[in-house]
Length: 262
Image (tube, rainbow, N blue to C red; front, top):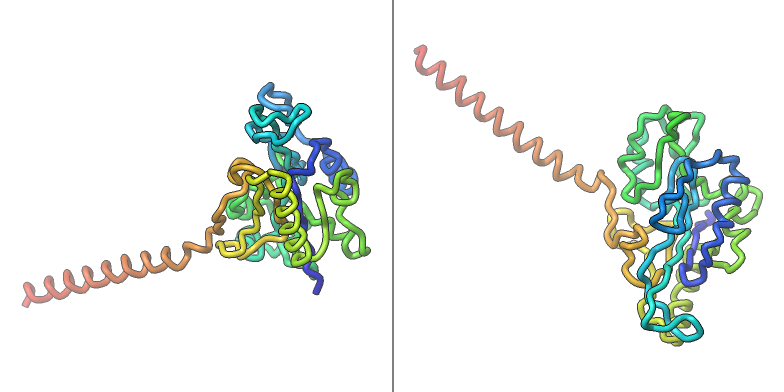
């Protein structure tokens, strides 16, 4: 089985949004509710049912170097966000209809013709990726260009990226490439770059890893993502304890009432 993955390198992103456009064109995704809010150059704001790739503009990332990148200035951190296709996927576990499935490429695919719009997947995603379309009523997210992969093609976003900020390939090879890239960045004086690859967490790893500068949380990349099912054991334990206490209390009350009658 081919274990496919994305490596998205924020240090190479130029914010052109070609990935957003290619994703919409290939997957025939309708226009999003684009709004210019005056707070950032980003006009799509977040992943949604109609934005499966989102180039975020993170302010406050320190620039390194000269020629307009004086260390005293603060610049932009640009990153193309996408569904993480988690190893332990909360959306897949919560879906009651089987609309979400694991493909032969190890991605998580949402089948819109089976989705009933219940929204359980939406609240079960630790990254806020899955969303319901306000007009359609069903949930949508990145498909990892499943149709293109079956035809031995790259996902559309990776294909069009002009700087190779989005790279597609085997997961282990991309991890090695990410480590090499971090070494190159440190050699150039960029010491705040890191790899986001949450293997030892509740999601047990993802098929979208990222290289970012500065605080990872600023890019909506939590250090310890967890799916809701993580708390099932403690939840059911609490229910069992409460039920046991109620049973004991009922028995005591029953025996006490029986003793007084005698």
